Image (cartoon, rainbow, N blue to C red; front, top):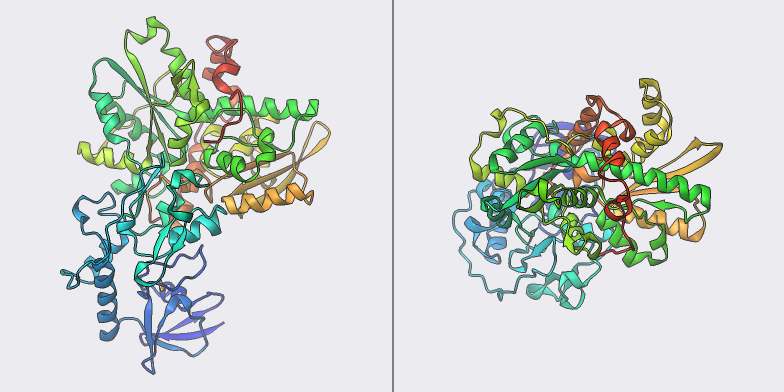
Length: 565
Ligand code: FES
């Protein structure tokens, strides 16, 4: 606790861990490229440098605040220093800004504008390196890397994977997987968090938009869309609408205008997932099956289990993910010649997640030899597609999703946040749907703060121990505790990305704390206004089970065998 003087104004501090946080609290947007409050401090870019009253310059991200400090954030010396740093970074950076996929979304580009860097006086002596296209989810371009180390730290510190590291020294330093292997051959789980934290175009999403445009232009093809819960709370922001507000109706409308024949809602198949996963859980409890049951909706988590905890493969639910279920059901539905009208069906899924691109290509994402999901488009790509059309998204009238797979319950919507799958399972298992029951479930511990949530609920005379985890490094901690016998759970829900799919690797970048919170609130608000709260009360789900799905439940909704990539 204490007070520091920033540019002549006194600012109190309490538990801020560094000077940078206090400067930001004072409303000054000090530039940074290598600092993130969720990661360890690296202190590499030096852009956050400030000057004290004795002329000493230091990186504010790496300095602990002391009572009585006096600092300046915008002296002439600092402005020149920052401009020079940006110029040097640009000098060692490929210069195809106008055609770079991150143009307009690049922190380095934004800082160059902000500090008036209009020329680069130095030549780029770095040898041009090949791009790594091996991953189904991301592309690595080492020529655009500024060595901030964000990807290295997020991969090891938040995700517990460590697929990327630094190699060589000095001007030869580079970020790469061990032994310069292709990223697809490593333990990378395709979560895309490295891309979220990358300030430049060095890591970007594997783009599938052109293939989708081609399909939309083909008159012999029926193009069907499904839209995941977390997508709807992240698109509006890009078009000036309130942060975190669900714009599902506008998404349906814009996809129809682009030419999609049907637009379905992944909340429908999230309901199917809960029907199947709750049944699987009860069956394992009653019949002595493998416990804890590990959720299977998140493909990055499933790959993580395969790579790091192979002994737990049988614990992973056999349920396909909501994406996998809906695509399999839709493809089967249109296999009927009467429904297909002689057209081939192309399934496009709009997801907040880069790992879904990997899941779609997994061996067990095929039915009768045909791929279930043809293309996965992330929220970021969807926003780019909307911008390409020139449609005024903000003014667009809302439309409802198409029938028969366009209606989901509130339980399906909350899949977009950490704890959502578990909460929906509890809703399914607990009788009743009155407000008091649902409020009681929401307060059982499933929505508590934190990335690891432990709680116990009563079910059929037993105490069910549950753990809800987000962030794979946290999942690793939990799994090691389970492995050693220190913890004993019946159900573990894991989402690879912290806070769940709302903060997935395919969502728009540069989300501050307000945006993160708004997306979560947006998901819960969408649940609040849904009339149907539980999967087993969704009339479309009931009629599917009673009709079309009869006898095909296992084929369309479950995986024959564990498969992680
Ligand atoms: Fe402080 Fe990069 S943000 S050194």
